[in-house]
Length: 294
Image (cartoon, rainbow, N blue to C red; front, side, top):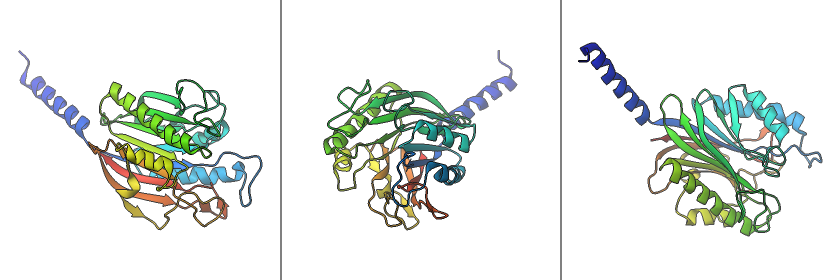
C-alpha cells in the first residue's frame, strides 16, 4: 500500500507535469537579413566591423524583451555567425550550416536560440533544388539556397514547436516558387515524424506580397503571414531599404501555421528601424513578432 503522503505527492506531481505540458508559451520570433560582410561596399554601406556592434546590440535588445526567442538570420557568413553568437552571450547557440559546402562555406540561414530556455530535438538543412539532400543549385538560381529546420522544446513547459528559416533566390522567379514548395514539403515531413506541432517560418523571400514566392506559399493554404494577423507596432511598413532611409519593399516575413489548426495566438509585429547612430546596420530591417503558442 502506498502511504497517503506519497500518494498525494504523486498526484500533485502528475498534475504539475500535465499543466506544464499544456501551458501556453509566449514566443518572440525574429527574422533579419543582416547583409553579408562585403569586401566591396555600396554607397552608404559601412564595413562589418562598424555594423557589428550596432547590429548585435539591436538583436540582443529585442531578444531580451522576451523570455523565449527564436531568431532566423539570413546572409550570415561564418565569421559573422561567430561574432553574433559571441556578442549575444555563451548561452546562445545555433542550428544551420553554410550553403556552399554543408559546413562553413557560403551564407548560412541559421536559427539562433538560448540553450537555457530551449533544446533542439531535431534539425536539418536542405537545399532548395530537385536534389535537396545534397549541396546543389535549383531552377536557375543565382546562388545555392537552403532551408534550416528545427524541432524545439521549451525546457520549462515541454511545449514543442517547429521553426524554419530560409532565404529565397534573388535571380530566378522559378527558383523562388519551387524553393518555397521544397520548404513546405520538408516542414510537413518533419511533422510526419514529430507530430502535428505548431510551425513558424522566417525568411527573406525576395518576393513582395504580390510576387511569385509569396503567392505560391499562400496558394498552398498551409501558413499565414503574421503581418496580416497581428497588431502592428511602429510606423515602418517595408523591410528592404538598401542603404537608404526610404523603404523599397516588404520581402522579409514571419509565417505561422498550420493554417487549419491555428496553434498560435498572434499578438504584435514590428518592422524595426535599421539606421542607428548614422549607420545602416543592414540593408534590411529586422522583423519582430510576438505570438502565443497554444
